[in-house]
Length: 256
Image 1: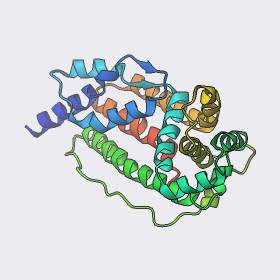
Image 2: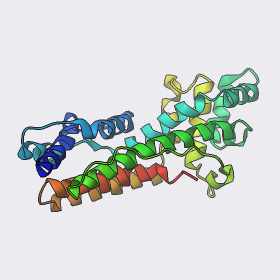
Image 3: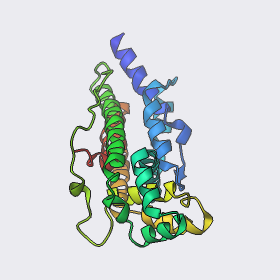
């Protein structure tokens, strides 16, 4: 009976991704779709192992470029909600939002120098930590299914108590991930981020080659793992190792 329940659970978790089957999303909502798929992945049900295998074989497929951009956009929304950071940006603009926005576009590192940047980035790190706990839980659950074990139900979230902004600053001429998302947040506070004339400039700030390469590697490793899988237990391992853990590590490395 226990084996039947475990096997049924394995079948169910793959079907939860079936809403994304056969699609390669190419817009700024890639991260949100992937996060929702991971969030809901353990709750699905299916009538047969063949059906689950069919769905998983063509499961949710993200575009690495847009995955990184949409994650940065979402973290920028969180940073932009910080009131201390908002006030710093408005004060620095001195009443001319467009002029200050143009300065930020020319040098995206500028918002990270403001005193309120640390408060905003702390919000981002705490959000990353919360979601990292959820992704680790999902990964542990898939690993448990692969080993035919019971599912763990909880992974603790650890609030960020200390970090150094200098550890996230760029060491090259290109802005770092932290600097990019704070620049996007600043443009949001200034009210120009969604203006048509700023779309291409915002896309340039949100495009990180390192993140694109990270997501591309995870996607490639997942495809190779699936191709070598023999059964749903193997596919459960692929889900844990690549579709969740490796993808989430593309930004959880930021945690202090």
